[in-house]
Length: 143
Picture 1 (cartoon, rainbow, N blue to C red):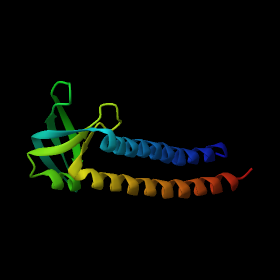
Picture 2 (cartoon, rainbow, N blue to C red; picture 1 turned 60 degrees about the vertical axis):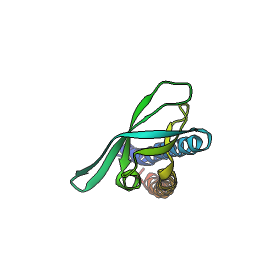
Picture 3 (spheres, one colour; picture 1 turned 30 degrees about the vertical axis):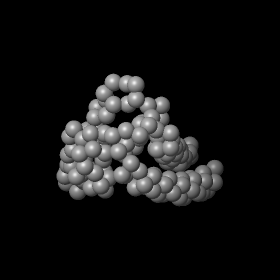
Picture 4 (cartoon, rainbow, N blue to C red; picture 1 turned 90 degrees about the vertical axis):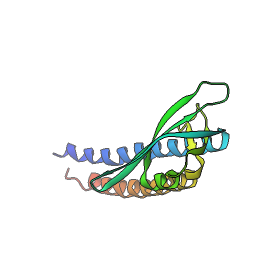
């Protein structure tokens, strides 16, 4: 039982991994917004799903990158993002195939970026608290 107390460090480890993932997504989002090619994505399909207490949806965009063939991409959307684009037939986008987030819809960029920053702040606070708790359990374990 004494050695199992170290398993509590899995929680901060997982939160650290999630924080790295959030930083990667935020960097990809900003990189695509800054360096991506301006294109117009035409809405092929749009749907909002109401499942129990969760509401989300998706949009299927058709666009043609410069010097490339036509692409069709399906993007998942939280309801807040879906509300901003639900009445649009054509959405201004930025596209960068080398980014970790290759497509950014310009009408929703500010909301997505601020959501990612809030997620990172919550992760940082959670990581700090769980590290303090894990540290306390590690130091106070019986020897």
